[in-house]
Image (cartoon, rainbow, N blue to C red; front, side, top):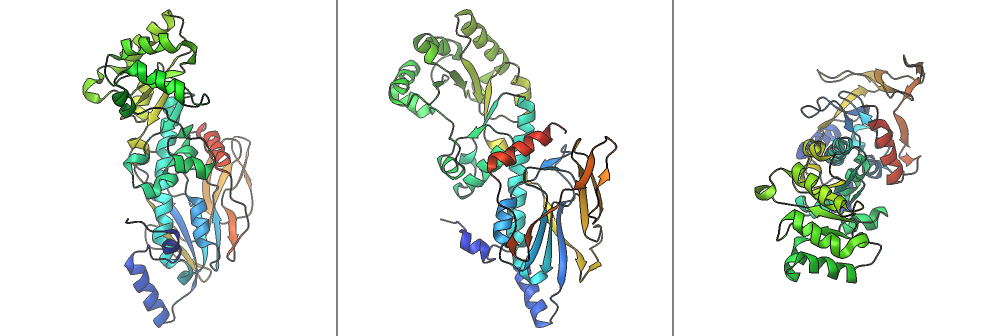
Length: 382
C-alpha cells in the first residue's frame, strides 16, 4: 500500500526535494542561522471569512525533541487571513525538511474542520454526522474524522476513529443489508432482533419503494422502538427533498409517531443542509466534509538572528495575535507580552502560547472534546 508511516514522516522523508537541496547548500556554506518562521494563510477559500485551526497536535508531535520553540494558537480556534497561527523558533536546519509534513497536517485538517463548522452552523442544533471516510485514502481516515468532530460534527462513522478517540461510531444499516434481505420492513425487523439495543433503530427506507409508504410500514411495525428513518435517495430520484420530508413528518405525526426522527444523507453540504434544517432532524454529510477545500497555509521566515526580515508581500518580525476573551475580535501587532482593553470592554491577550520550549513539550495534549467545545464556543461569534 502507498502509505507513509509515522517513522517516515518524522524522519523528514515526506518533504519537497528542494528542502533537502537547500540544507545541502546551507551545510556546505555554513549558512545555518537561528530564525523565527510563522505559519499563516494569505487567502481563504472563496466566500470564507474565517477558518478553524486544526492539526496542531500532530505538528507538535513532529517537532517535539527538535531544538526549537513553538508558539501556537489553541487547536479548534477560529482564525482569519494573515493571522499567525504558529511560530517556530530555532536553527533553520532543525525543521526545514519537516515543512511539507507540517503544512500537510494543517492544510487538510483545518479544511475539513472548517467545512464541518460551516455545516454545523447551517444545521443549527440538529445532528450532523461525518460519513465521508470512504471518499478519501483510508490512511488518513482517523485524522479526517477527528477534524470533522472538532469542527462540530456530533459523531462519525469510522470504527478506527472511534477506537482512537474514545467516541462511539455512528451508523446503522447500509443498502446492501436491505438488498440481501429483500424487503425494507424485514431488514428493519432483523436489525431490531439482532443488534444491541444501545444502537438506535434508524432504518434506511429508500432502497426499494416510495419513502412515504416504506416509512409508514416500518414505523407502524416497530412503533416506539423506531428512533428514526434515513433517506439516502439518489439525485436521479430525489425530487423535492424538503417536500418529501414534510410529507413524512405529517404521516408520522398523524399516526402518533412524533418520536420518529428524519435523517438525510447523500450529497449534502452547508447550502443543502440550510435548505432542509427546518424539516430534518439530522444529517449524514460525506464528501463535502472529507474532501473539503484545503486551507492553504504557508510557512515563512520572518526573523533571522533576531533581526526582522521577510520576503516581499509578508510582514517581517515576530508577532502577537491579540484576541478578546469576550467578543473574540482579533488584532495582529508586533510581539508583545502586554494585554490591551478591547472596545467591547473585554481583554485582548496574545492567543499564541508556548507549546514547546527548546524541544520540550510543556503542555499536555487536549482531549478532542475540549478542542471541539472551544470551536463551538468561538463559532457563535462568526
